[in-house]
Image (cartoon, rainbow, N blue to C red; front, side, top):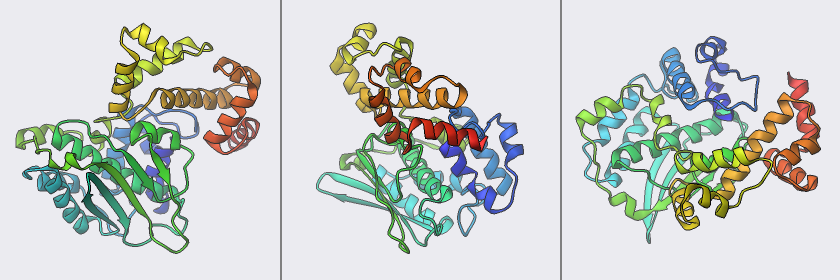
Length: 337
């Protein structure tokens, strides 16, 4: 839901009621613990773009008029390699999105995709619109790069220029498990740095005009449904862990049920940008938030149902997830209803 809140920030700045768009996509932002199906998120993405005639969601000084994403794709599709495609993308974005500068660097086997504010997007560095601007542009460029190469491209690490947001647990599934947060100094501009294997820049661009025509159907919101981290093996492991609760399965238990070796599961999860521990923690977090906001179950019972034999361990985990104790989270959520 944190991504939805950020996506709506530009509407709020313009005094536009988001409710008709939310109703049309059947999204209820009042339930902060609810997870939004990716298809509805993509539909809301496109509806906001059309409502504002701005593919930048009204977050920037200059709107990105409808069609910008299509021409971004057209500027990159004839590039011989991914490196050239990303350089072309950075030059195109300089024209249609001057508030954020994009650059690609390579040195000693490491490549970096760098996104820097040309001006401060908000006085508050933790403004939801500013946070979403960085999330959105990284997701857009990474998704486009994956599509151009015809394969998922793993990000080794990402440094985001703001404090850890409430929905940071999902970063491991959407970006990388090694997501770090370095708040921008007061009065300064922020820089996001996404690192990956430099050899990926040498991959050939495998798409053609026919593929682009199909790709643009439902774009740009459609790109949020492609090359997701939370797919295939991640989903299978998450479903098995959920079904077993309150029992806690080990990686060996999961491997036995899937008739695969633990090493194979570890490798596939790593290829999808996740890990066994990341999935287990994210599942417990989602279920804990839902139980605390939708039921009156005692906190000790919630902890036990999620497989915590020690309530204090649940307490520590919950503070790490949300920055507050379970009882305070439940009270604040109830007060905001």
